[in-house]
Length: 258
Image (cartoon, rainbow, N blue to C red):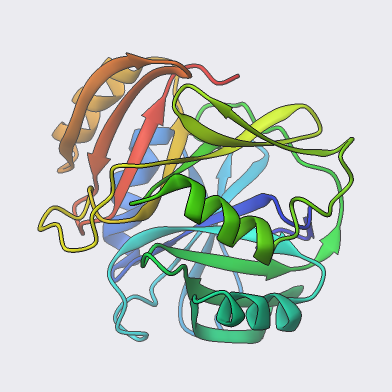
């Protein structure tokens, strides 16, 4: 987990996997990642590096916690217990924690529409603009009602009460966008359906990883055993595509980020 975080802003992504060998065998060649052992309080855990930049974590905890294989986005907080209370008060659920982990405390939760996310309490710092290939550079919530979700997350993480010079919530390109220090860091869009058979359509946070060439990366992912869930296309934020890893974890690619 990151040593520093910005309260109310996305600060980390972690893959809940079942098989670390399967995960590293897929994501390592795909993004050029290398891996180092991390804390193993709840089982094997790897720190993920792109070059000399730590960009994510992978833990073999999906089976242990009876959770689906998935990428989880963590939002920073200065008090995990208070944030957990705010989640429950606003109709969300807290599935795990808050618990001590590495250099801070974490919790796993879901919003009222069922989208899962994490909470991370660590030392406070400034947002890290990791733009190198293989870095998570954008997250987007697909949910049934973007405005209702914005009210939930805004209340939980006090977006409206935060420093207006640092935090801004705007409507652009048919979605609610959170900006921190002038940078767009997350978006919330409609169209999600809780009862959908397709997990891509159910409310969830989608993690976008930066790549130089989306089309070439999609081809490589297929060769490595991944599945294309959304063909490459141009969007308001760059060229994007959707993928599923061999264990079922959904993630996205983006070749340009603003």
